[in-house]
Length: 165
Image (tube, rainbow, N blue to C red; front, side, top):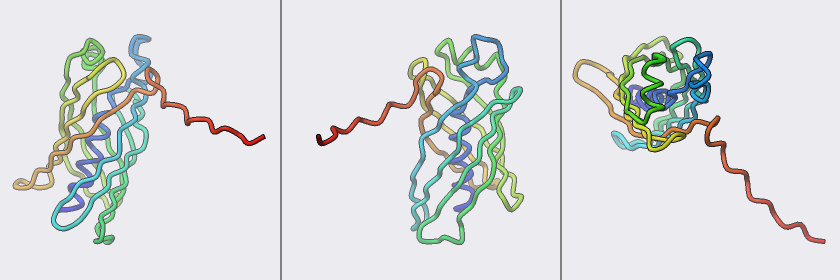
């Protein structure tokens, strides 16, 4: 069940990746998406999900994920997240409207789990993502995180340190 939670978190991150590579110029800012790491607690374990940068190819966003479970390291998992987001949905997101998505998480061990969710923009460059990972017919995990479009809102520069003279 913990592996399912990790995938769900990863999927949430991917969902946040509502970017569009190769789309019309107005959607160029959606080509890559950064998703914030997520920590959660489940069944006496801390789960940290880290997702790589989401890249859009066609209408699919793809990213890698890594889920670390402490203290149960044997539940650690990594794999790929894939989410479909059509150009029409990205245009709605650019207009400030929430969009829904569907996709799946594929673990390194070959387990595929459906995911779905909702992306809600806060402004032109950031917003919230809610992802549901369907682990089994009776177990569904829901994760909430944030996303950032680096083309619109680059990461803040590290503060400069004064040098002794």
